[in-house]
Image 1: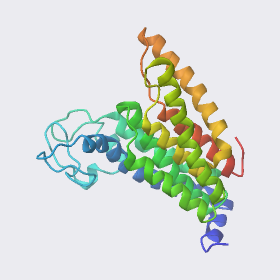
Image 2 (image 1 turned 90 degrees about the vertical axis):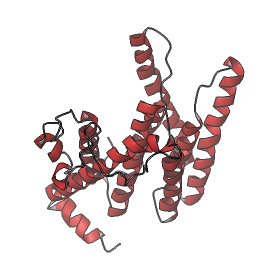
Image 3 (image 1 turned 30 degrees about the vertical axis):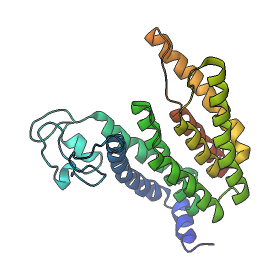
Length: 271
């Protein structure tokens, strides 16, 4: 038993509301950082030499219209957006609502994991996983991009966590990473050979490899089935609405499927 487990079980037993509250607050803070990652990482990948410095820390958070640098009280997750009524305090231009929803979604996911996960180690793992998957899903949804800067650390974290006593033994995690990559790699070239078109991106291979490292090779058939069904339904609906064939990102469906299976395999309560 780790030193954190007695406190965790006390919170889970008599003070679940406090555990949920603390998890929600932490999730909102992490969500605020994820908003920066989601907004800036695609721009950083397209950054040209000679352009102003751009990373996750610089320039400081500011209004894109009037360049007003935000004060600390304008950067409080969720609260600041609501207090400012979604507008810059100086020029009154609308602040994108997606930044609020990223913070809310992360807060709710952290709270949900606090309710479902049976140990502090599993809870911490779940927070790491859903944070990466949320960032990857939204970047892929908006930019058709799954950055190596997120997929590669996610893979290594999955292997590390399972090497340190996660739900999957290390051998199955390694096999899962290899099988996850090769599965979509082979599908990519099969589709290319039949149609002459790209049906998947290399980022999808790497994301499935990362999920294989977290869940083990045994989960991959279920993961691909759920992701494929979600992609068919939602992608088909988007195509129907547009009235023409449209490319759609596969990363969000892989991420949703991976999160569902992680909860199923790690939770004490099956949904």
